Length: 392
Image 1: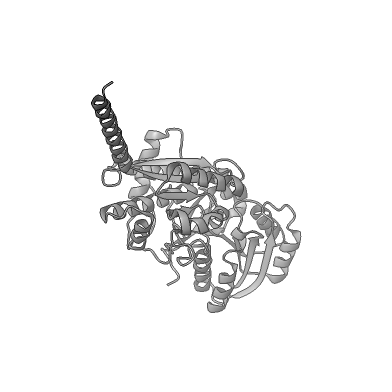
Image 2: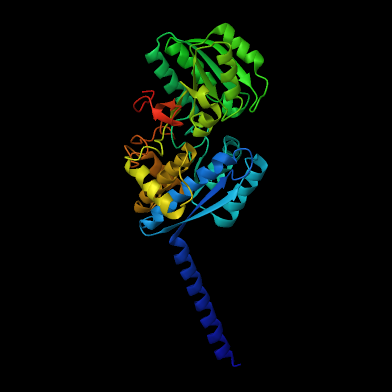
């Protein structure tokens, strides 16, 4: 081959390679990747499967409606098994392989483990299953947010409701010896003082504890008017309530978000009478709400065997709505980066979710509004017992 011909061939191949890379880059620019580590297996799987479904559905509905100003969302998920080492490895694998703009995590533990690198290295918008106050700290975790009120906010809303219903009431906290359980307790103590409520007991038990005799006997001695559970989803809540009722204790039992599930009502049966909880999301049964109707229609079309969606699904769905809104605002501003997404998050004010929540306004990396719900034992559902509430 002549030298001139060889040069021409090399030049042609180089230009073709550059064109191919430019085309590939253009295609990549039209796809926005969102990664997630979800607890699909493990002890939190009963909620994780639904959280994942809610988040995915919100993103796919957005794609059906035009995506992010024409750009399509790609959802990438791995199972973290509700096991921190497994979840951390999955998080780093997704970040290295897929380089998403947004990540979703399966637990408080995962969020705390990866927060230093998110802040210094990855700089992606991040949310999770957790309502941890620490993860919502804008100074320490500027790229993280909670898709609702924190556990402390939830405690505060419950205590605010109690103070209105029974001024000076005697209150007990019953929480697990975990980060999840202990997270809102210091704030709860301060709120009791502020609201002139009498905090008469703090009971601690292991998640899934079988023997809670000593804690129940202490509650019998202290005779609280209200007992607030935190850090449990199921056991030992039913055991505590049954033993307290056996002792004739007439207090009202309450729970935060993960204790306001229909699964718990199924387990409690008649013992659920009077049980109350706090939840920032409206319920599947509220069919007159536009977004609930939309979710129902989408579910019927795509998952005909699914007949209901729990509060964990709604948590994932609302998070997806917030991801989409942040992406649209950042893209419109020409700042489709982690920092641009944080700016977009901070600009959210009175954002409508089709009635799935109260209008949402960002405040310190959270959306601190919810309502009180009360168990309807006959229907096995929770029904609103208050209007939307915040601590302001």
